[in-house]
Image (spheres, rainbow, N blue to C red):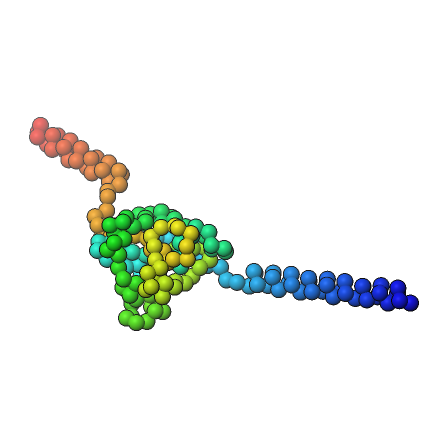
Amino acid sequence: MVCNLHAIKGDDSMKTFKHAIAILALALVTMVSGTANATLISDPLTSDVYITYNGLDWAWASPVAAASWWPNELMAPSFHEGWRYATATEWASRPEASMFLTVPGDVSTAKNAVAYWNTYFTHIDYSDAVNGYVTSSLNGSAYETWYVRDASGSAPVPEPSTFILLGAGLAGLAYTRKRFAKK
C-alpha cells in the first residue's frame, strides 16, 4: 500500500510540474507576442522630427547606442540618405536636449526620430540626455543617440540628367542660331 501511495503521489507531482511548465510557456508566449513592435519608417525624415542648429540637422535617433539591444535593432545613420555620426567638432557644439522640445518644459513634445532608425523602440529618455548620457556613435551603451546631417537648407546638387537636358537645350539653341544666321 505504501508503494501505491508513493506512485500516486509521484503522478500528482509530475502532473503539477507539467501543468506549471505549460502555464509558464503560455505566459512567455503571451508576453513576447503581446508586446508592440515599432514599424521602422524608411521614408525620408519629415521636418517635425528633427531640429536645425549651427548649420546641421540633429535627429534624436534612439534611446540606446547599441546596434542590437534586444528586441530592438538600431540602424546606422546612413539608413537615411545624408545622415551620419557627428564629428568631434560638431559634437562639441551640439544643441541642448531642451532644444528638441516644441513646448518648453513639456518632455512629451520632444522632437524625436526614433521610429526612423529603430525596429522596436518608440521612445526617448529625456532625462538621460539632460544628464549627459548622449552620444553620436554606436558604443553599446544605454546612452541616447543623436545623428546629424548638413542642414537641409543647403543647395541641392543637380543630377546628371539635368546637365544632359541643359546641354541638349544649349545645342538646340546654337543649331537654331546658326541656321538663321545663314539665311
